[in-house]
Length: 370
Image (cartoon, rainbow, N blue to C red; front, side, top):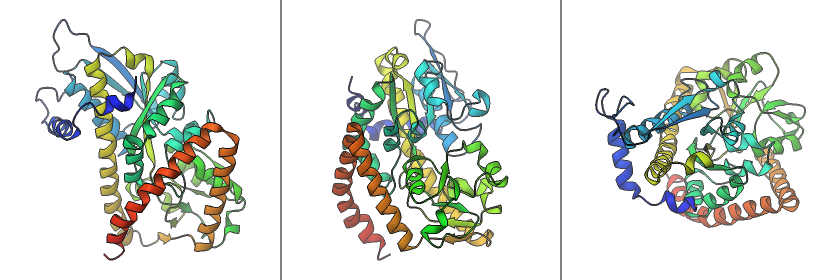
């Protein structure tokens, strides 16, 4: 089945309007409690969704809550999905294996966490100096990205869908100011994905740490720096109390989270429930981008007015130039090493060249004068 075609079955304008109305029903209205009555002759499917995030994590956790609510309302209670957060299942970076094995029918995480299983998973989250969020969504849904992602995950018996975008992320929190590229040498930094590969090339010691362990790792001195998301989520984590230098981004211009689905479980659903799941994923993923933009705007204002000790910085032109150089070298090396890497890299770069020309003509031309 071509899931790209299935995604576009409904008119998104009509469906999203229905979803917005449904999600804003007051408590106690039909479907809002999550237990709408179903006809006695209709089968009820019960799924579990394991997520990388702990209970009540804002934004990331909001995506799954909204998704589950929409599915339940639109299916009239025929598909009930229970969210299992990482503080319950105890394996925040184990979502891939959970869903692949069928222990959980679904998961919510980020594709670049599976770098150790297959490096190419990185490319479906974001890459340094790559597409911004609107460009990347265009690539996924209209530029062939979904087909490439389906090709990649099918070998594992999985389906993967965009699961929410943070937009452009900040470059991280540092204990000390980074003045030259030499300051990265022996710097212990939590940074996942392709950006970690780039910083390793300039001498940093990079590591991936689950979200729930970030503050503790920084506090104990296990790391000297870390990147998380941006103002939308960073302030509540308290990183600024230990590492006051806050750098603007270069490494994750469009970080896309991920819905993972066990294909066998999905194929057991009737056609209408499959469509409901897909539309609910698409709706809540894009909603997260809007929420991330809003929360970042609110917290960016707070940084200026309530957190005078935070030192907002931008890496020098010399540092950025070196990082771009190393990034380009690594992409070239990766493409030479793996045919599928080459396929994805060339596909993304060709699409970005096309779409970026319009971004510059539209958004950039407008913003640079305003």
